[in-house]
Length: 274
Image 1 (cartoon, one colour):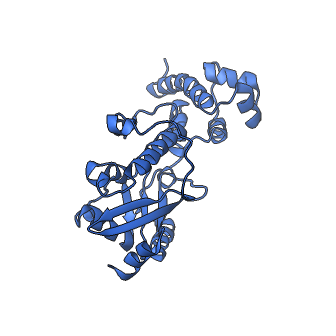
Image 2: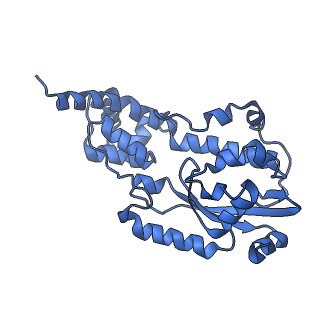
Image 3: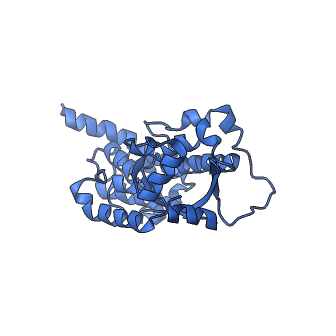
């Protein structure tokens, strides 16, 4: 009689095929396309998807890489195939992340006096430089910058922030489109955790903004977010950076966003502190 561990491995192997098939379909690849990219046969891939064959650990990783599966979902594929997860998921303050954290902190410090932040894949604030703390305090009150990890998407789309963003409809529209696009790339097969912003996307006011693109020509080369409060007007755009070739699922989830002034008045406000 098979041991409990063996039975779990068989059950997991049976779950691997449908999961692989959903990832392949989400990327728009035929079995032949994926088989060729992994240097295997279409017949073998068909057997893997149907459960007639079990993949090796190396084949799971090869298929996941070819399908651009995020590392945390690669771990799910490994478990489904009956193997231990391949990738760690470490917080930024873990000892092994020290060189990366030092590099990111240097980026944030060098961006001062302009804002720079680190967010996770759900846009929870992980780290902020002095410029970002000042901007958050100015817009949302002095306590916001002291919260452990405020969610910046929820803050931006909140009714209170709507009154402070002059082009809120434009900014909110692009944010909703970004969230939907990232959800399709990050978890097209539908993860167990669900969409953390499902309640926001279901809000009638926000849902009404997710309309098809019109014929209007943009009046700027990138999206400017225009804040206005207490007679002060600030206009900012951002550049997003990610770590190249991450080998840790936690690190892959992080992104650094650097904000720059779009006009002289904004530059002066950050440079002079008033």
